[in-house]
Image (cartoon, rainbow, N blue to C red):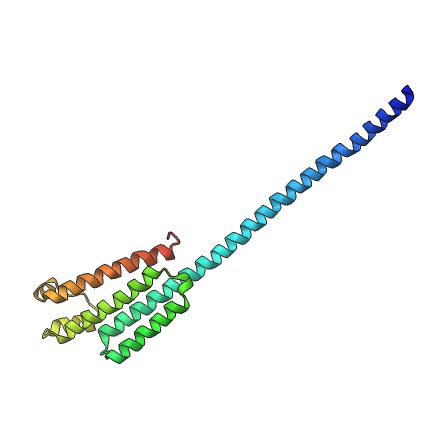
Length: 179
């Protein structure tokens, strides 16, 4: 009986000698697969995030160009009410289509900016100042003497500058990915 017991213990030792390394190898393989999966998943998430951020930046850049193109057009051409509304509709359509990448506040700010630019150019057009009309048409800044003499124009110019400053700050933040 003692020899049967020793044979059983010896067989058990042989099984353990084989099983322990196999268990260690299985644990190592499982751990390696898990770590590899986590790295792959992280790369996939980063890639998706980078793609989104790239599209978002492109959207903001294109919107900025559309806003400034209209700003320049309002200053250099006579744009009637119907034409202005068509141009605004085009920009709003763009913002609607690209809304996934735009903050709602930025869409509102863009419309506010264009409305103030329109109001500003309308006040200048209605003024008697040839210098002011030339400054608008040449897209130059106005002299402080002129804007202070026309209180309404000074107020609107300040509003346009403030809104444009907000747009610039927000768009720069998006374009530099610090939003």
